[in-house]
Image (cartoon, rainbow, N blue to C red; front, side, top):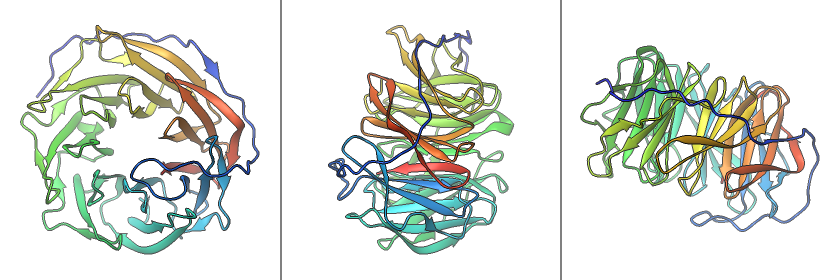
Length: 361
């Protein structure tokens, strides 16, 4: 189904530039964990060329502190990470080896323990876990499908009987909404975005009426607002689309001011917990642009935060944002206030070689 709407492009101006590269450490005590997560706040970075994961405790100022024994070797070159909402389990994806590494997280120390591996066969690209921590969804690029795994009480993955779920091309990204109502998948080669309704008990994805939708040129990445009122779809053409989700029917409709330009080559987006700000990571532009919306729905840029060489991923933990730089082998640290990212001290901490993904608890 082709969405009919205005496609006026809004060019966003860079208003605020922040960020100076540096490195160092801190010895402050870990901060109080978020609701639903016990023990230490922690962050994990997958180092794609090192075959390991850097482990950090997050202190009360939001600064990353290397956990004793880090990095954690996984004998895999992981390019994606996902974590269960309770912060007890971490999964690392190695597309080249068709492998998911299963790990538990010590709630007191943040230390990782490998509990197993799950083989895949379809050139997987991305992962997402449902908010109850019961199912893991895996986008596949070789088999044009989405695999679904049940998460056992021991953290081990078991593929569901109804898996895989077929789509019309190679899946590049998958996203589960915060309430667990929807699963989204992007298929750039066919210009399609899939919306599935998720069964709360079995995790089964049921194709939503009118899905897939045709949107943009090559829709590449999907992020969903925590309140499930809208989704952000990044296009390989460099444009950003904001899609409203009908609260009753789940039907999707492109906003009148979409698509708009945030910066060259947007690769990842995160909607903050207030549903007010979208943080958009640009690899080519080497920035994170913060975007908000007027009451009319028109987008405007709140700030633009300068990153290092070849930033590859970001994550938000409470009022802090972290961005990994694959070209600098580090993680940059920021505090967030009304959508504006301010560098912490130190500005960056060292990671392994070619850090590609980050997950926080």
